Length: 113
Image (cartoon, rainbow, N blue to C red; front, side, top):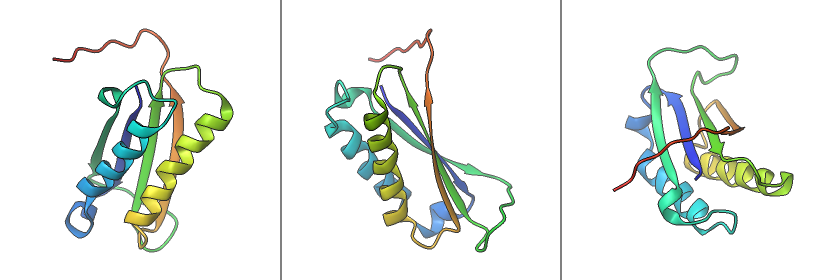
């Protein structure tokens, strides 16, 4: 059930291939042994309309991994590192890249066709 939400500086969608970044992360998570099936993986980006960070260039990408509880620390670290590696490869000139992992506590509801 991993959801990966990538917040980023407005304009990165014009200068970088964020769809390919989503595909790369989706493929890695869908193939990961801790993921129950590819249909559970969601990756999306959201452009921030304003922001300020303490580095130059004034660009950022921040990924939040939303996971159901139960994965051990090594697995959590592996998923976070996969995400950081994908961000770093796709956005090498972005000023700040960060990854945060958050457990989703019940209730988590979903509907799929």
